[in-house]
Length: 364
Image (cartoon, rainbow, N blue to C red):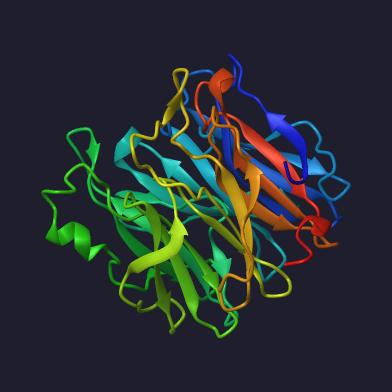
């Protein structure tokens, strides 16, 4: 496979799952990888979980032992998960996470700030005032060139033990994360609205992500159960969006991840094979979601393909998803993603950090 596996965070009896993280460079040059650390009380999305981190002093060639950032008890929550990291304008370290309480009925994004590079945290700003189930994927919040912070979320109603079709919403902060406002109307798949009976079991739009293009437009890509990612574009910093359309990215029911590189190109990671002809989502009793292979492509500054994708992972008895992406100082790429297989019980239970060297894709 391309690149090198740096480490695997493998589940055990006291730590049933490690998943969904993000990278950031600290002021002393260390790299931090923060992620969700579940305890030995379950591995479902709402099970008891805390936020942990690891540090690298050599640009991601090695990582030290995991340590606690803060616990769900500290936040008076049942579960905290799904990290995004960002450097704030005043120099603070910003950490976005989901806070869940009342189990599956309330899931809200928060922003914690640290003035000492992650040793202590303060404020814990609630980003959405309304109660409800709002999904913010890991490594998703971005800063636009006009300094607006843009947060894409999917809101899901929950009824009779089932998530109902979701709507994508955009929240933004124009004061460096101190206050947040909903700035867009709901983005929904009209196809699901018109053919509701046909797609009764589907959850519509899920797990949106955003990336800013060279021309200033914002590209939003959205997980669906229609065999591909869907997409929409904004010309006004996220306030209004074009009609939702199928994107070129085929996929199973799995999220895509995109990160803007220093040169303006877009590093894009996803699973390219949709569910069809009875393709299995399980391997020897472990749920993989058919989230294999995992591939990447580097898009140009306008978001167009300029090469074929390359495979990162191909194991058919594992699943790979929820990828965090970080570009090192010399242009290598660090990936942190779920990589569980049969021995882990589920694709979501193990985190892998892999380094892809610039030489692996410098022809793109």
